[in-house]
Amino acid sequence: MFPEKKKRISWWAIVLILLFVGAAGASGYFGVDYYQKKQSEKNKKAEEPAKETAPDPYAGWKTYTNNDIGYTLKYPADWTYKETNQISEITQQLVKYVAFISPQKSSLHLGLRKAGDDSFNTTDRTGIGAGEDKPIAEKASTFLGEKITPKAHVWDGKVGEYFFDLTGGACGCDTTLWFGLENDIDWATQAKTWSELDTVGKIFASASWLASDDSAGSETNLNKAKGVVSKYLDARMTRDLENAKPYMTQAFISAMNQEKFAGVSSPSMGKYSDLSAKYLSNADLYQVTATIHWFLQNEESGTSVWTLNVVNESGKFLVNEVNGSYE
Image (cartoon, rainbow, N blue to C red; front, side, top):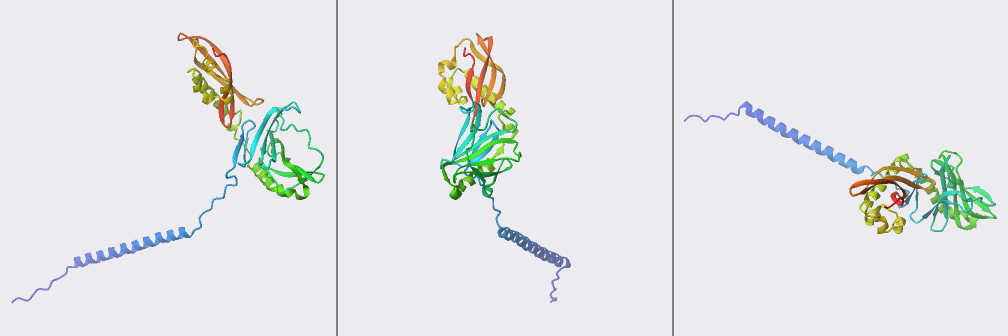
């Protein structure tokens, strides 16, 4: 019987085995290393404190915008305001200002105009009465980039008003600012009104000039006035008042009726052209002119010029009056 032969493992098989074991070990090493790095990054992010967003000091407040003069500010939601834009019975001059009224019936009078604009007054008040003004430095605020400090007006131990003066000229404006209390209070205990003074200070601090494109007479707003006139005239050509109502003020709608709006059927309004607009600061409205083309039996029979007054009601431009024939 022949002796049994011993099996031999070739050298190349050994090499393949070693390479396989090495590759498996390396992949395991790098896999563990990758996992450990990812876990470390995750733990690091978890340990980092969340970035806090500063609370909005004007959260819940409303925005007041005066497009005529060109400024905007914030005021509390439970306050109201009333604008004055009329000839004063006292001074017989045009007066423009706004009064913000608190729930306690105290009133913040804010009269503002840009420096050099003497086309109106910021108050029709002719004096402040006898008394002594006592500054309250701890309640200072800013208004249009300038420091402003309230002064309590004291007479016979009573405080009824606080006045505010801008003297630095940084705002480039003329102002008449005061805060009147519903009832006079004792000077010795007037600190109880300081919570309202804090609110007044926040109102002042929120004020800013509008960008030039947002000012009343800007090209942007003139184009808005022409735009609403164009829509109104498009509706006019349908001779249906309902189509025009979205572009009319409520007062204009109330003064109009379907028969007047439609006019006669012949000649009819066939088209319009040459829209031009200007802002009338003394009346706080936009005046738009348009050439109306009249057609008779599909042929143009003549033209007339209409003047349409447009007002800005809280950012919405509306036609308020039309001067021109409806025939």
